[in-house]
Image (cartoon, rainbow, N blue to C red):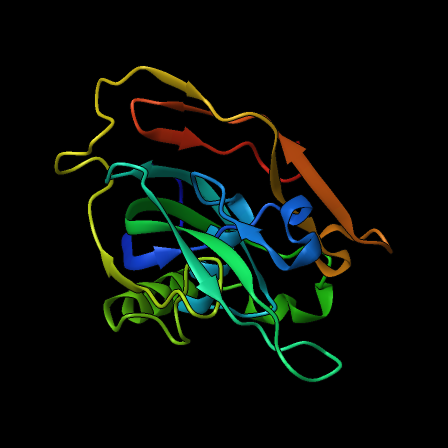
Length: 204
């Protein structure tokens, strides 16, 4: 077991983990599974401090992957609105395992590098359902979190074998976490094994 880890279940009616390439032209299409960055955002909504970097280790897809399209009327920048099709994931439930490490690029916060303190606050915040709103990829996809034991319970893809998910966005590397002076987008080719995706670390 990794130090400073938490395990939780996140669930909601809809999710929209958008492939940035499909955002052009107002249409939005969700990936089949959550991106690393979206799960990191959920962990940071549970508890976050500039001292910490949240690392997502793995996700387990509990329900069958299903899509639903909706006609949406987004407001245009110039006024008025337009018609667009958004394709959401439906009936979402994931188990997530994550942990935190200290942000070595913020040495001025060194006095706050107290593992025990932050781990206890993180666990308390999770029990309370998170400190900020939890959502699955998009603001309109409200979700809920609660503690769980990773791997417990029956998942739809248990003993399913490998599903190759193609090239996906892994996430975005921000300067305050990497020490570089520019943003970087990361791509990878995940494979879901028996419903579980093990994430490579951002620096990999």
